[in-house]
Image (tube, rainbow, N blue to C red; front, top):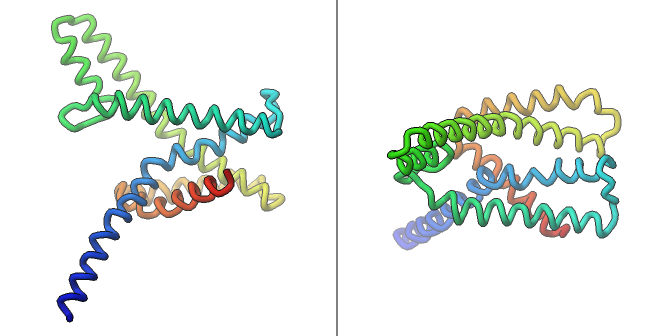
Length: 195
């Protein structure tokens, strides 16, 4: 009986591990995609662009966001970028290495592709610096809807959250995924329930 219970516990653990990995992956991979609509919607309906906050305006903007995500994630990344791997490695530097290899017989084209790759890497690093700041700042600004008079606390609270996030980040992507995975799953469930 003890062996049967330990086998059952082992099978529960092995079944729970992929679910935990899935939740952690949601926290790491889809965190940026899932939070981008927050500041997108805030900016679109701020009044500067003339988009009315009515049924057609909201559904029109949501349709643009949805199809943009489908095109960028499903088509660009899944069909093109994931197939262009350099011995299992991906990203802008792997694409640059593949492009250099393909243009080996053309030195000027090869140099141009390297410059394009460096520009792409610079854009990626710039995006990775500004995206957390914008996401956190937008989230803290959103607290102003629930709590009056916290406008002067937005920047200090954002700095505290960003410093805490970067301190956690040094422990690795797996820990960040474990921390943010359940939060992102809850966020997507709430968005799905509201939609």
